[in-house]
Image (tube, rainbow, N blue to C red; front, side, top):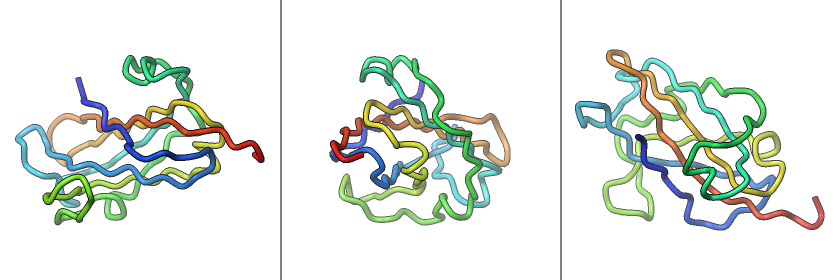
Length: 132
C-alpha cells in the first residue's frame, strides 16, 4: 500500500497547487527521466479525510497524461521538508481539478521503463471560497 503524502499548507478552491514527492523505484533508487516510461495522474473528490485514506471518491475531470520530462527531475530539487529534496512534481489545473472545496486524493501511477507500475499518492483539503 502506498503512503499518502499530505499537503501541509492550506489551499482554497481554484488555487494552483503543486504536489511534490521524493520517489524511488522498487529497487529503492531515485527515479529519473530515463527510468520512467509514463505517468498518469487522476484527481478524486472525497467526502472526508478518511475517504482519502480509504481511496473512496469520485473522479474529477479526465486522467492526466503527464510529460515525464516536465514532472520528473534527474537531480533532487530543494524543498522545505528536508535537505534531500524531491524528484517528482505534479501540478494539475486548479480550475478543472480543484474547482470545489473539499477533500482530494491525487494519484499518479508511475510506469517505469522496466518493472511494474506503482502509485504516488497525495491528499489535501481545499477550503471553499465565498465568492466562487
